[in-house]
Amino acid sequence: DGEVGEFIITARRAEDERFLAGITDGNARDVTVELDFLEQNISYVAQVYRDAKSSHWDTDPTAYVIEELQIEAGNNLAIWMAPGGGFAVRFVPQ
Image (spheres, rainbow, N blue to C red):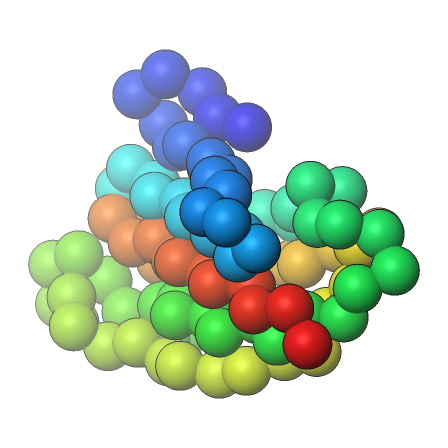
Protein backbone atom coordinates (compact mmCIF):
# COMPACT_ATOMS: atom_id res chain seq x y z
CA ASP A 1 0.00 0.00 0.00
CA GLY A 2 1.10 3.60 -0.25
CA GLU A 3 0.82 7.04 -1.80
CA VAL A 4 3.75 8.65 -3.62
CA GLY A 5 5.43 11.18 -1.34
CA GLU A 6 3.30 10.18 1.68
CA PHE A 7 3.90 6.59 2.82
CA ILE A 8 4.71 3.06 1.70
CA ILE A 9 4.06 -0.40 3.11
CA THR A 10 5.72 -3.43 1.55
CA ALA A 11 6.00 -7.16 2.23
CA ARG A 12 8.69 -9.64 1.28
CA ARG A 13 9.40 -13.36 1.58
CA ALA A 14 12.74 -15.02 2.30
CA GLU A 15 12.47 -18.82 2.42
CA ASP A 16 9.91 -19.62 5.16
CA GLU A 17 10.00 -16.20 6.85
CA ARG A 18 7.98 -13.13 5.86
CA PHE A 19 8.77 -9.46 6.39
CA LEU A 20 6.64 -6.33 6.46
CA ALA A 21 7.82 -2.72 6.65
CA GLY A 22 6.45 0.77 6.32
CA ILE A 23 7.58 4.39 6.46
CA THR A 24 5.65 7.65 6.46
CA ASP A 25 6.28 11.30 5.70
CA GLY A 26 6.04 14.04 8.33
CA ASN A 27 2.47 13.05 9.20
CA ALA A 28 1.49 10.49 11.83
CA ARG A 29 -0.51 7.64 10.35
CA ASP A 30 -2.61 4.70 11.56
CA VAL A 31 -2.46 1.73 9.18
CA THR A 32 -4.13 -1.66 9.20
CA VAL A 33 -2.45 -4.35 7.11
CA GLU A 34 -4.23 -7.51 6.03
CA LEU A 35 -1.86 -10.42 6.59
CA ASP A 36 -3.15 -12.39 3.61
CA PHE A 37 0.43 -12.87 2.37
CA LEU A 38 1.12 -15.31 5.24
CA GLU A 39 0.74 -19.02 4.55
CA GLN A 40 -2.59 -20.50 5.64
CA ASN A 41 -2.79 -22.87 8.63
CA ILE A 42 0.57 -21.76 10.07
CA SER A 43 1.05 -19.75 13.26
CA TYR A 44 3.74 -17.07 13.24
CA VAL A 45 5.58 -15.12 15.88
CA ALA A 46 5.61 -11.52 14.70
CA GLN A 47 8.67 -9.61 15.92
CA VAL A 48 7.47 -6.00 15.69
CA TYR A 49 9.73 -2.95 15.73
CA ARG A 50 7.55 0.18 15.82
CA ASP A 51 7.46 3.81 16.87
CA ALA A 52 6.78 4.60 20.53
CA LYS A 53 3.95 7.03 21.27
CA SER A 54 6.54 9.73 22.03
CA SER A 55 8.29 9.26 18.66
CA HIS A 56 8.58 12.25 16.33
CA TRP A 57 11.15 12.92 13.61
CA ASP A 58 12.07 16.27 15.19
CA THR A 59 11.69 15.88 18.96
CA ASP A 60 12.22 12.16 19.74
CA PRO A 61 13.44 10.29 16.62
CA THR A 62 14.91 7.28 18.44
CA ALA A 63 11.94 6.25 20.60
CA TYR A 64 10.74 2.79 19.60
CA VAL A 65 9.08 -0.36 20.94
CA ILE A 66 9.93 -4.00 20.30
CA GLU A 67 7.22 -6.59 20.88
CA GLU A 68 6.27 -10.13 19.89
CA LEU A 69 2.77 -11.15 18.82
CA GLN A 70 1.20 -14.48 17.86
CA ILE A 71 -0.24 -14.08 14.34
CA GLU A 72 -1.96 -16.22 11.70
CA ALA A 73 -2.85 -15.67 8.04
CA GLY A 74 -6.09 -13.77 7.75
CA ASN A 75 -5.39 -11.62 10.81
CA ASN A 76 -4.96 -7.86 10.49
CA LEU A 77 -2.12 -5.89 12.04
CA ALA A 78 -2.86 -2.33 13.16
CA ILE A 79 0.19 -0.09 13.56
CA TRP A 80 0.64 3.60 14.30
CA MET A 81 3.51 5.39 12.57
CA ALA A 82 4.91 8.56 14.13
CA PRO A 83 5.62 11.65 12.01
CA GLY A 84 8.68 10.68 9.95
CA GLY A 85 8.55 7.17 11.41
CA GLY A 86 7.82 3.63 10.40
CA PHE A 87 7.92 -0.01 11.40
CA ALA A 88 9.40 -3.41 10.56
CA VAL A 89 7.98 -6.86 11.27
CA ARG A 90 9.59 -10.28 10.94
CA PHE A 91 7.17 -13.24 10.81
CA VAL A 92 8.73 -16.51 11.99
CA PRO A 93 6.67 -19.70 11.46
CA GLN A 94 6.05 -21.87 14.51
